[in-house]
Length: 147
Image (cartoon, rainbow, N blue to C red; front, side, top):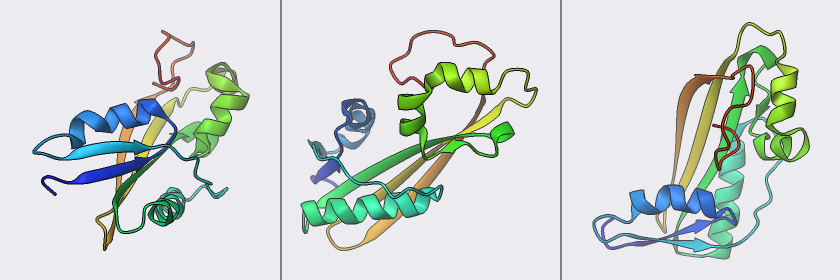
């Protein structure tokens, strides 16, 4: 993968910045291609990343592309909001999530990052999980809104 240009299709500059320093090593270059991709309404994070990668490949035929999708699973809420994190933050926000969890003892969460990569010929998919917990009150004012 050395000396490659990889396109990251997203409008979210923060997501681009998250990968920029990681990809831009050993001669690789990450380029943001701003386009809004349609996400299927499902809780299947792999289906979402596959769909997003297919759209990105159509926008940039024959190019190397990287796609990202993130979800936040709250155990006590049956995995809600899952991959519908962006919608949840836009509607009820972090304050609403804290209210939903009022009085709940099980505050375990998983943050899921799904990646899709197309090398110009083949697709590869990756998924990482970070375990954590939801505080009882909102703390700090980070840029992500969910950490």
